[in-house]
Length: 269
Image (cartoon, rainbow, N blue to C red):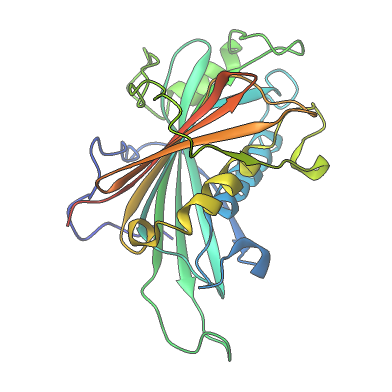
């Protein structure tokens, strides 16, 4: 299922659409109650788990799951155009929108046909979330590695952009401490088998902050996270945050260094 955006794309820069010729991988998942907030909206960490699931399933379905099995995410962009709520089934389509020899921009379009039940009896418009993630191919030591020729050929056929370069979307420097920093407590279940903080766990901290900024997520919004340093077991995260107009900015600080930066921005009406 492919839903077209009938209104002008509400975010700048817009995420690249899929080329007509491009192959894509598709998977569907049920929205579970563990994915949603108290208003039944699929949370950002729930969306991140869908993105992890389809990435894993996509790699397993290819011929290069043995030759190029290790990838890390440098950035994720989540554009919530029409919210997805429970109950529903989400359909994800994944393709390569740009690449270079060591990294790719992987696009995932998430659509949802909503259902009703006794807890959410009203019909809702079909959900639509557009995402893009900057993935780096790494070796078994975690170092950036060249994509194999076979994998590069398959990915390159999906896009005309073969000279992808990194450019931050978060140029704002870390502001001085104004006394409002808070500690975000991590749990053992937040870490993956490689002793790194799971990508979805970062978004759980963001969801805690959004409780005080519901006006941002009550409309179409763009959420961006850039991972700068790994967070390992035993770490303590300090959150520094600033609200600037329709944008919430977050810095995740570990041992006095910024480990990740986040922005959540309400689209201009």
